Amino acid sequence: MRSLKYLFTCLSLIAAGCAAPIKDPHSYARPEAIRVEHLTLDLNVDFTKKQLTGTATLRLRREQPGATTLTLDTQDLTITRITLRPGGAVAAWKLQATDPLLGQALEVTLAADTTEVAIDYATSPGARALQWLEPAMTAGKVHPFLLSQSESILARTWVPLQDSPSVRFTYDATLHVPQELLALMSAENPQKKSPDGVYHFHMPQPVPSYLMAIAVGDLAFRGFDGRSGVYAEPVTLPAAAHEFEDTPRMIAAAEKLYGPYRWGRYDLLVLPPSFPYGGMENPRLTFVTPTILAGDKSLADLIAHELAHSWSGNLVTNATWNDFWLNEGFTNYFQQRITEELYGHARSEMFWLLDKNKAKELMATLPAADQALYLELAGRDPDDAPENVYWKGSLFLRLLEETAGRERWDWFLREYFDANAFKSMTTAHFVEILKAKLPDVAANAGIEAWLHGPGFPTNCPVPRSTAFASVEAEAKRFAGGSPATTIAIGPWSTQERLHFIRSMPSLGQERMAALEDAFHFSASGNSEILAAWLFKSIQEDYRPAYPALERFLTAQGRRKFLKQLYTEMAKTPANLDLARRIYAQARPTYHPVSQSAIDEILKAK
Ligand code: BES
Ligand code: ZN
Image (cartoon, rainbow, N blue to C red):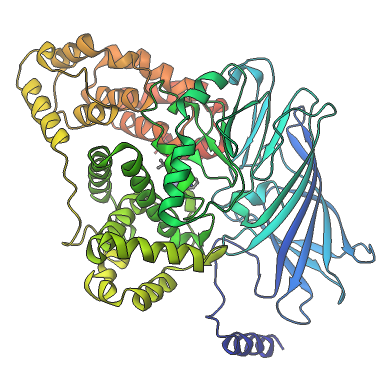
């Protein structure tokens, strides 16, 4: 029976001219049988119990006529009741065995005429997507805060759904929150608090589950122009509005390159410092870390990145996490193009070089299979996918640009986003499109080596920055003994300062102290510069910087910074002890995503 059904599916797919159904190794869902097309959420947000409770109603489309089992992804959810619509009969359902990575498949038996299922459920206080912050962990210190991070496979810890990037659905939501707080989602958002704590959301564009997002806190809004603005805690709002005021120009630059912004508004939400990422491209509402509030807009390129995801990722979506480079490599490339447009070629070229250096360093530590753009992540947490795909992926696209010529390449990308809007994309399909539209480029760029081979193929683009060349010369001169006061660091950009610290050879205590005395890096208000200096200090075992290191590790929870610093500390027994002591105190303040990363680094061997 089963194989007959399978044959039927294959035949109908062939008839429809489609490829085989996408197999997502990180989801139990079977969208090829029954697909979720709309979600209606009604949730109560309980800060005391650290729990969301309510109902998720899923509207379904049968892909296989006669299919009666709906399979969903869940993790740590308590399901209390499932009813079928029309009719309202109570459904038979079953939670399958728990897998520590994937959670539990929820199987619901449908009636022949079922078009919707309503699932009553509650989240667990430890739900991995969610972080419930005590007031002390916010900027205002008075109200609690709830934030989510669903990418990659954590949406299933707060909503029962088909948690695969290959399934898109529209959604509506009603949230009940404490009266004094504002609720936001990756949807059409309110700009003011409601008097009764009830909020209604509508998301008319279909999105994959990893773009579901929620935040609840004491938040205020300020607009930049008619279609973009920023939400933040009231005390942070003025700084945030200033830091990100180039956002409308970024949107204009992005649209000029790759076509209209299709999501209505584009707003930013500045989160408390425990937010585990630099930024997250939740549609209509990019989530950002406050650690990029440098005061001088020097880290605002991150906004260009998250904005670029409104095309690469949110519009054309990696079909599985194995194709993650299609999201992040494309976005990194697009980010550089926006940077070039707004701030000029010299600045974007510095980013290209910084990225290439990071990729080189990282690849030296990765097994060959993890150096490819296409990854095999089955059985692994996609959140741990090597970041290499960002940098190697964007360099690959730069190579395609150089091979095609910028004009043709931009034409290709614009077409690509138009033709595949609101669809998922596999690596193989991308190659087919490239071969069809730019056959000469596809034939000459050595695609296979980039997608499936290790390292940098020999045709890797070579970014050049004269500014960086002189920074390197200065670093060398300083390491050779010339006084810090002779280094004219004053006019240097953040990127030049970062490159100066990172390209500095081993120095020893006296020269580290000379640098610190001259430039006070330990007191830098720029988190990237501070993190680079602290990293260097651990490498040099330069202890005068350790109080600043401890402060930084307890004041923010951005996974990237934590991973770098704790990993470096874990290399000597004394620093490992210190790291464990700091972590014991800081762990409860980190988001679950950061906690698992650091647990792994500091675990007793
Ligand atoms: N989508 C990512 C964040 C992400 C990746 C979350 C994988 C979960 C799994 C986001 O767009 C991103 O790349 N953020 C970067 C910033 C960027 C400028 C490189 C970050 O958070 O550091
Ligand atoms: Zn990204």
